[in-house]
Length: 395
Image (tube, rainbow, N blue to C red; front, top):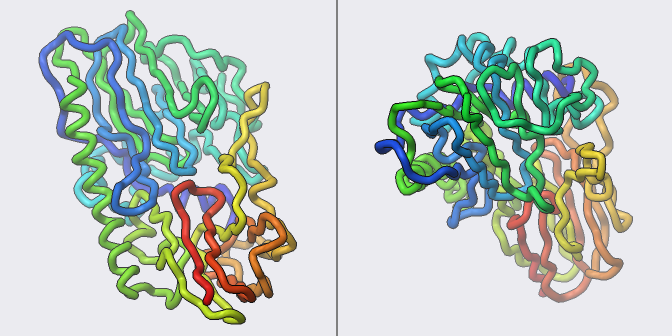
């Protein structure tokens, strides 16, 4: 299956846009904050949404997108092209809010996906989507996956065909924050926005009004928590079932394979169980579902790197297996069929030898085994997702 097609299948759904506003009378703060992604206090995971996903502002105000870093890359992308291509499935925009689940591709989504830059392409990271960009017309958008000519963002006025934050970095001057400044002369109206990595289901609406009600931060906070809790509940129910042994996969899990979590717009970033008990010489096997296994983990570093010229790339040092452990052999073809599942044995491990990782690129359902040859506690983690940690206790 091609990377582009896989992205379309994974990123199916509808534009997330709340029909409930968190508004009051005019005036108030000049900057309003929307949460981007969200961390539950009941499980390690990612919630692919903007909380809340609807805000009303005056021209001249700023919408600040504050990102909770869960290991997932996000953008804030909008413009007339986004609104135009999303029009066919706007009638379905409330469904994901009520269920937290995206189960099918709506009419028109293929054209939406084809007509806008995707964060990933066959070559890796698409710089058109990953870097900051403003394109006054559709013709100004590069078609060769290179960065846009205009990367310094002026205040948004509503006439731009494409306007994007690009990748919101984990650290640095702009770490975990994107300020969308609304121009003083912005056209009144409602503008759809979305994340160009996770697709239209991770999106929302910004209403620019000259004389209508504008949002109040306290109301936004309450509504955002309500929306995040609604999505988190779908994943929390799955996590509780898997902790109780109710999973399509038996044994130890790295991630979640339940169909409810596959269709939910978020992810459970947990090792289940978090603590595994084993005897010396016992082989421990995990089923990998979108995550990796790393022991003697170094200081955290995100899997995405932003170079001095603004290019966004993968941190290949994290993607590759390390310490002599085997990684996954890539599929020999890309013909639209899932790659064959593999079961790989890393052999004996006594805790020494520095950092050990099986790399990334695993197919859900692959298995990985390690034989522990010495008593002790062996903490481990997914090197991509902070907060996804576990421990093997060997006696």
